[in-house]
Length: 172
Image (tube, rainbow, N blue to C red):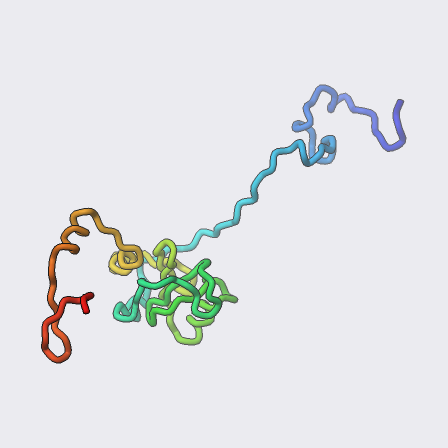
């Protein structure tokens, strides 16, 4: 028996699997039967440049990676970038983010991702690829082998105080 809402099967669809049919003619299945597919976040390809006109504005003397890397406005640790001109940390790279706003207000265009060390030009939106940035990337996440740690632990290094006296840094 054929109901009014159901069309009889045509000769072309008999013997075909549901996946061979066009989407409009496929039978409706419960969502529970289909495996859940995780949606992947779209990541745009960021253009890379080796010639950044703003590399001369980097101020290595103000960069300090020894404390927690949090946005100075939102206090969030997600998607944080370091301004390589003044050493401040801000969140995001997009147009409505504290980092973008700071870049435009202050004219600071060279930024480093605090998680992976990649350097970007904000607001121009390209990744800066330059060997002169390797020292900054190393200081972001330094690594030492056993020999270096042993050498630092046993070697005494004296420094001069402002009044000219010798002292060992780290000792009171």
